[in-house]
Each structure stands twice: as structure tokens, then as C-alpha cells.
Length: 311
Image (cartoon, rainbow, N blue to C red):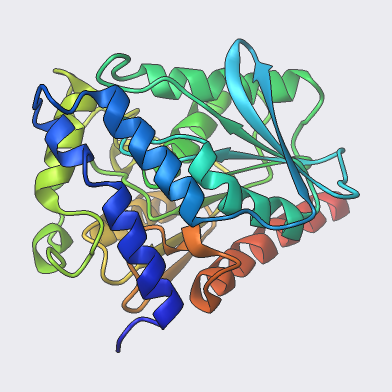
């Protein structure tokens, strides 16, 4: 089934914005990381205008630059921590104004988006440490269990799980729920979907993921549970929603992550969206399919907030 026209147009724009990332990963000297990131961030941000009724400002939490997304008439007693993707290498907060803006507007609460440091300059585990610093600061400011949720996509979808594990192990309050979108949860990149979906996913392929993993890990093992939560002890984590596109090479990442959570008695909801590609949610507010997926995530978080209030 062909993609809806508006979704296909924006997808083509996303692919064009990423044109320098491959050469930068290969170390081509005429395409430094600074240029690759800047072009990707600016063009993707221009492609995806944010919704009305939401403000964006730069702040700092625990020394980590963070984008604060605030809807009109926000309930500031609650918040969402959103962790952007980008393979731990090329992500940025600016292209996420539309997704986090739609999240904030539909939830009616502020959204905090850490602008964490990235590889190759800042390899594993620095990005995770930065995001956890922001989480810890939010808890220290009074956002405890029942008032804080976590979400993220791709690398951020994996970090959402890891940050909750770190909070659990350090005795911090856990969030009420998590939403993991198209999670890159297994950096071994060995799932069957890496091959069976290669060429179907228009944004990600096995070769690029192997290059990203090597750039991020820089010698660390891909089976380290902090890098790949499919291998982690995830006992006692909050209810988690996993959303994945059926065309994604990361399909088995999501299925294996769900299996690991389920086997360790974490309540999960798994959604597999036929024919959808990696993080189609980026087009929420501009595409019915992306908007519907985000609405499901919002409903999940809202239900868990309500459940916590009744408890």
C-alpha cells in the first residue's frame, strides 16, 4: 500500500536532510560531523513546523542543555522527559519541536528534551549519563512517581529503559510509565529483521546501524546492558508501551525488548504498525498515521497518570 502523499513528501525531505550522515560516518574529511549534524538538524526542523499553542525555550538541568516545551495552560505538576534519537551520534532537539510539541499539547504538560552530548566526541556511556542527569534533576525538583513519564525514540527509546534502570538501582523514584518508539535496543544488530526488512525501511539499514554502533561504542561491547537493554535486568520497571513499524529493520529489537520486559514481569503494551517506517511519529500533526500513533502513546501515559492517582 503506497504511503499517503503528505507522508511520502515529508519522508523524502527527511532522507534528503540525512544526505551527509553516511559520508561523515565513513570519515570522509570533506564532511565533518559539525556540518553533517547542522544540515540534518536545520533541514529537518524546517520540514517539520511545530504546532500552535506551544512555546519552546532553552534551559539547563544539572548542567545539561535542555529544550523545555510548554503548552498553553500547562499542568506543571506533571512532566514528560523525552529522549530524542539519532543513533547516539547525529540527533538534535530542534527537529523534535513538532513531535514534542504535539506530545506536550495533547498531554497538557511540559516536556523536557535533553540536548545530550554525542559520539564520536562523547562516546558510550556519555549520552546516557547526560540524560540520567536530567532525569535525576527533575526528580530532585519534585517530580516523583505519579507525576513524571518518560518517552524516547530509536536510541532514545533504548535510553528510556536504561534511565529507568539506573533510577531503580540508585533508589530514585521511577516514572509512572514509559513509551519506547522504534527502539534501537540491541546494538549487536543480529535480529532477523535486519535482513528481512533491509530495503523496506527507507531511513535505516543494517550497514548504517553497524557504523553507528561502532562510532558510539568505541570498543565497548554491544551486549553491555546499558547499550542494549534487551540484555538488561529490567525487573520492577514501570508499565511500558513499545511502538514499532512493521517495515523497520529494528522490528526484532522491539520484539526482543518486549520479550525481555515481559519475562521479567514488566507490564507491556506492544504495537506493531504494518508498513510503517522508523519513527514515523516525527510527522505527528501532519500525517494521520503518525498522529494516531502519538495519540495512542498519549492515551497510554494519561491512563497511567490516572491509575497512579487512584492508587
